Image 1 (cartoon, rainbow, N blue to C red):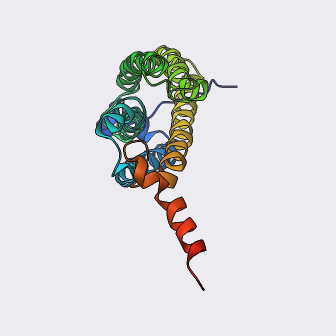
Image 2: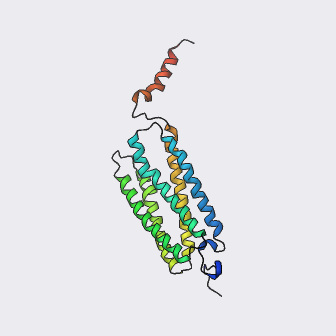
Image 3: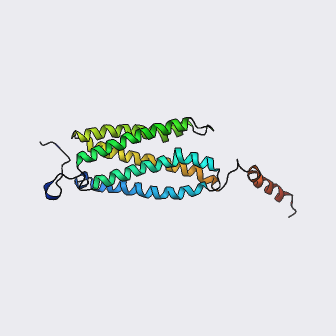
Length: 211
C-alpha cells in the first residue's frame, strides 16, 4: 500500500504546480470561473444603488460590496495559481498562507466596522455572514496552507474545500445584498419624504375622482 501524495511532473522533469495535478485542474477551473463571473455580476448589482444617499453608498461599498469582490478575487487568483504549471506546490502553499493572513485581517476589520456602524444598520446576521464567517474560513485556510507546505495528505483537499466554502459564502452574501437592494432600487425614501408619500396620495386621489 503506497501513500497518496499530490505530486506532478512538469516540463523537463521539474516539480510543477497543482495546476498539473490529476483530478484538480477541473475543480480549480470551475471555482475560478465561477468567481470571475460573480465579480462581473457585482458590477451590475452596483447599478441598484442609483438614487441612494452617497454616504450610504460609500458605507455599503466599504463594508459589504468591496469585501465580496475581495473574497471572489482571492478565489480567482488562487485558482489561477493552482493551474499555472510553473507554480510549485510549496509556492502555492505560500501564496495560500499570505492570502489567508490578509483575508483574516480584512474579515476582522469588516466585523468591527459593521458592529460600529453609526446608524445601527449592521445586525447580528450581517456581522456573522460578512465578517465572522469569512474570518473563520481564512484562518482555516491558513492551517490548510501550512499542512500543504508540510506535504500533509489532507493539505490539498483542505485548501480546495475551503476555497469552495469561500465561494459559496460569497454567493450567499451577494444574493443577500441583491435581495436587499432590488426592492428599493432607484429610490431613497429617507432623503425625500414627499416622494415616499406620493404613492398613497395618488391612490387617495384616484378614489375621490368620479368614475
